[in-house]
Length: 243
Image (cartoon, rainbow, N blue to C red; front, side, top):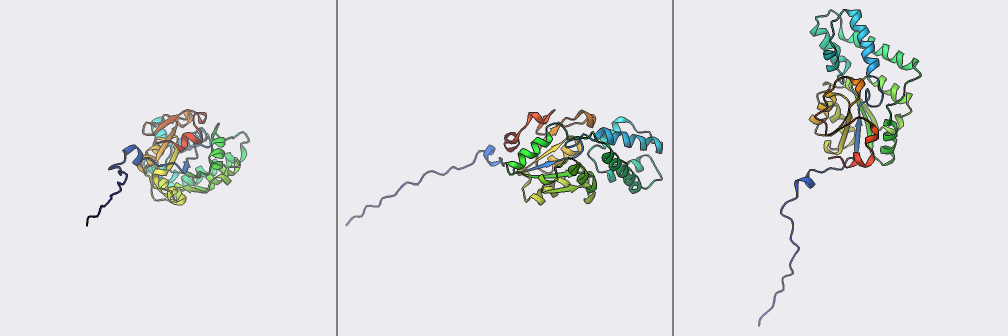
């Protein structure tokens, strides 16, 4: 007796996945820098720091000054003290600068978010993105700015570079932000205005939007995935699909 055995063909499985598909991660977390991205504060920082340089008789070039944008105040003043052979304690200079800035922030009534950024933050929040501020500024400054602009409720967390071992351009601050959001680095987009910040974001394995803020000095943002001059250039869909 003969038996017929029917073999039902199974659909062919792909032997490989296109690299463009394998490397695509949908964005679920957006990490904002603070100074120069949410608040156009760099001119104020430059002015306050310039006054301190003059008081301390430090010969500070514009090029050197610009190189510290995005770096924590602790690292900046430590570098300055060492480079210029000052007898001052970096921590006291940091504290003095922070007090000067907080005083300015509390007194100035004509301080607003950078055009378009508040609307982007609110739209991202409405579309269920997790938002984090990761800034080299101390936590008290981050909180003061977000409260002044009534934006604190849109962020699940904030990370201050003063809490960490390493400052931008090291990626520690952004990796910490990803942990707080329970996101993979590939699922994060960072918005930065400084060379140090962009370098840190890419070193963390994240996508990065470079915001070319003229008030942040001459910053090399070429490592960013995209560079914008205005927040009107991007929206929720743009951020979600950024590769």
